[in-house]
Image (tube, rainbow, N blue to C red; front, side):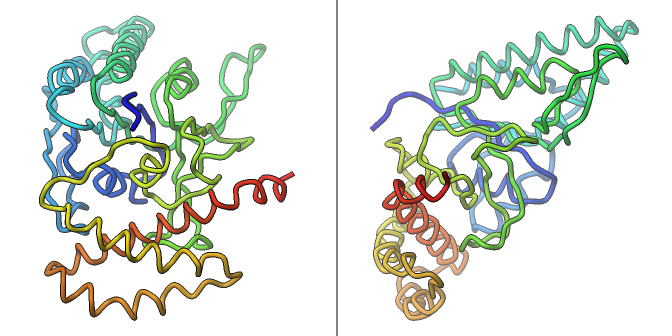
Length: 300
């Protein structure tokens, strides 16, 4: 199993499942987030550990939290970092009427956060909002900036993603079987920044970072109270995998046939839904990786 710790940025519009995807991936992570961000975890029947960000907690304080907590948690997730960054800029502008000075200080804070995130002894993930492609600069020095994670300023939108192992944009796509109508886009895009150094995800993949990490050789054990899910996910995946090879896979029939057995063994209906979603995503990923060369040739 790989020991290198992963650093990733996951961005997209609000209300698309970015936070829920992080809970699915690392349910025993420490989440640093504005109030209310983790209410979506109720979909999974799980209550994650959360430190709420308020007006007294800024980028510098969050950086110190990562340094202090990195050895105590398998992962740390900074949720809604775009909102946290906006609040930081407002504070700095109030304290420093000189706008250029305020943004210089903000850039330094964000670079420190980036460096600490990459050096931490645990996985560190950021979720952020989406910034559309645009032109920036003075009239005679205009330049095109790809769509990217939303962060104030001209420097950070391009430099922060460059240091991440995974930069995944969340987009709407109902063509991929899954429990959510949104997926990670990690393949090349002429208008948006994205990338996947794990090299296991298809260009578009369901919002299931845990399955991608497992396929890439990372140890991502579930918390003790959820360990029982693994045997059900393994069994369901084996049944679903052959169906993925069909032009029109009928996964619903397989899932319905197995639902009574799942209900007999798993008390919480939301945990049954979680197991089904993980099995479906794993089968989709395994099918794509089993047919990697054919997919590569088709893409030429």
